[in-house]
Length: 245
Ligand SMILES: NC(=O)c1ccc[n+]([C@@H]2O[C@H](COP(=O)([O-])OP(=O)(O)OC[C@H]3O[C@@H](n4cnc5c(N)ncnc54)[C@H](OP(=O)(O)O)[C@@H]3O)[C@@H](O)[C@H]2O)c1
Image (tube, helix red, strand yellow):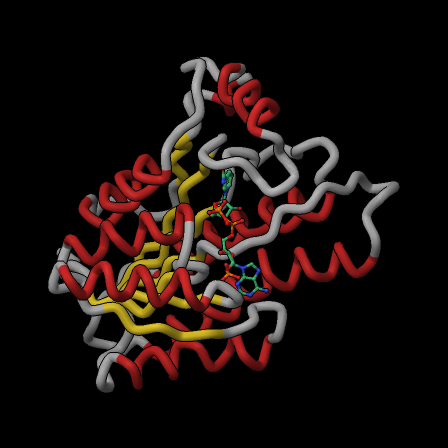
């Protein structure tokens, strides 16, 4: 039986889905290191909000497009936690830009792979290397309901996210039994910057459940994965059934 995680690192935790995950973890009395890149004021506001509720949230800035910065995040997180190891890693940060194969620039391709795939790999590797042998840990990758099939018009995003699903299963096999590794595949939860509210409403309406989801739907799947100690290498679609279309 695995111990419940007591410490967590959430990448891209200042806003949107990442912030919902941070709130859910703090409600579980988990000590959280909230990583952000550019959202310093949102991160500070969330830290203050949760401090009022008795929660412990530490802030850590870093650009996940820079492998040197990514590699050092877990060590920095441990320092913020007073020397305690991180026992839960949530790879949530990502970019999501349009671009079919014909349109995708080399820079766009490289940035998607760096942020959406290489950074989760480096953090997974550092997490596994740093976790003391007598401890258990968990990793949750926030992927996409499109993890196992391409999303037309998003070549770099699709390639990076489907490779992250392969990495998730690889890590689940290699890191068991000490570390459980699972994934969540969100469907339409919040609009991307390039989605108009009308276009996003249409995407939600086209799911079998006929609506978009809420960041708390992702947080609730996260808590389920934490609680069910017999799950590893699995992906939960939280998408109103969109993956069935
Ligand atoms: N929203 C949805 O409906 C949906 C659907 C399918 C899958 N997903 C997946 O769910 C996760 C969360 O979605 P979301 O919509 O909440 O994400 P988001 O707002 O697009 O991005 C989450 C965070 O990623 C961080 N980030 C971006 N580039 C970074 C970089 N170079 N270095 C470090 N951090 C960086 C940003 O941090 P800062 O703000 O601090 O810069 C951002 O707040 C993502 O993995 C996404 O692919 C979401």
